[in-house]
Image 1: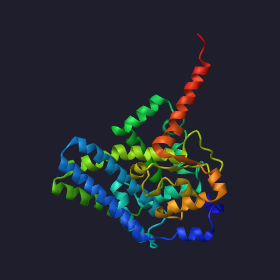
Image 2: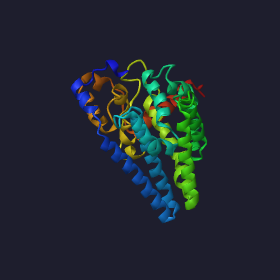
Image 3: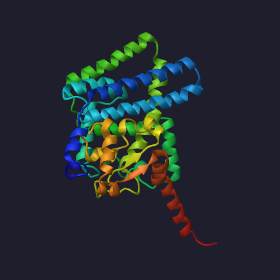
Length: 321
């Protein structure tokens, strides 16, 4: 999509595409430090009132790890592709049961064939009830509640595995190393006697809030009745989030999805600058699909307005008494 785009000049794009590996490394360290602090706080407090916000924090940082996987998939960390994957897998992908290269194959095809029959993301989502809008209010409510008991999460996880494992690219050596990674962790958890903590502070947020946030962001990127798929400026949307939303829903610049689709060479820490540069282009500023807030503009645009329109149609067609 972005090959013919000319919303920023070549010199600016070259500058914005430069890698600063220390910034990514710092982001990884901070994300894990927040996760560790959140877990320590939850355990030390031994309070359910503290546990629930801790779950939100951990799930938000899982979103952050997923956001960094996205950058690694585009080789936006270091020049050495092999070393990049060797670092990204154990620190980012394997902890949330993903792989860098598996995600990369799926994601680059999504970039190449966005919102077409050759887009693996689009094919598996388009036409399903959870990605069809406007939605029935009852179904939307049950779908959201399903994440808190893991039902919707398991459905989404099965969908992800179907896409990523459709073509198994991994060598036998890679599979052995990954299995050894999980066995080593399991051995350590058993030796330390912390399986309860692993379940409460990793598996619970992973199978509930993490997948809920992932679904919400997936809808934000490519779905809703206001989307127009015939132009690169309207085939996806950028969401300008409220400050707190960047911590949970769109860490590491994930909300600048339209800019990323057009210029995927720009790493996450320069997406704000890219957005500002593109907004100085009159064509982009006028035509870009930009929504304000995930819990305000997006919620209203995708769900609330659809329910209002459906309710209005029902009243208009109802027989007079």
